Length: 277
Image (tube, rainbow, N blue to C red; front, side, top):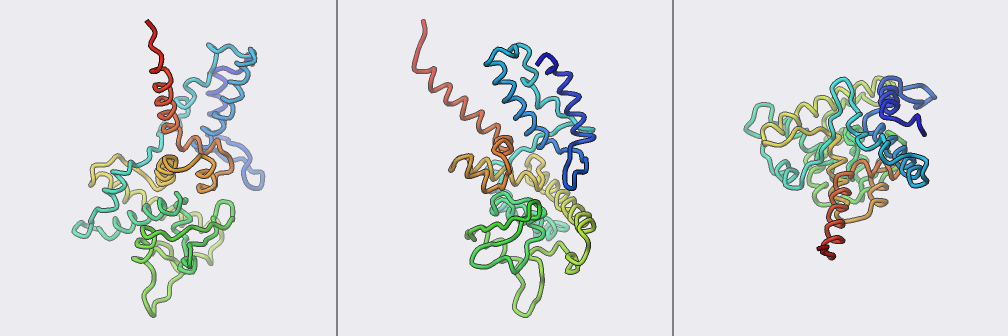
């Protein structure tokens, strides 16, 4: 335990950012900041147990400001969720009179579809097929190849209806982002195409944020936005299932600020009952 220092954590974080750990086919690959945060949270829990057992001094706890240690070449920028007010402003925005407004509208709708599809990953929304829209939305997630079934709420259906093919029109994908021959390419080429399209959507979202006076946001923040709103209405384990996280620790990273806020409110409620002279 004496080796568990801030210096050790910095070296470990750098290792994960540059070399990483074993991914698919046991190849080493760098970890994202979200993954690193999850690892640190798990290690922090172990350290907390060690402190409770007297194996680690509380004053020597290196995890106190662990999140601040996560810095890549451009620095670690926390993915902030949109507030419901900002999401409403985004949904109501009209870009028809703006240069390339059609592209902005498409990118906005893709983001909203992510949110209404339980915070689905951007790649899954781009690959959403017309055939997936049935009595429910049924599709296979790319990351784990698991099937997902989502109720078609009026809000989600309103978005999809704008892009579903009209009578006599034949098209594979719901959103006009991927070419019809996309599925004929190998997985590496597909990934390159997806990354390129996601970068385009993110550039459009950045422009939208500036136009609407919002903080910059990306496709990935749709997952955080959904998770934060969902926590107001259901429990963490349900959100884990809806986001298809493999561990509860990952879900906790997504809603960390909201959980801390609830802790603060609970603390105030507890200690306000007793007034010490």
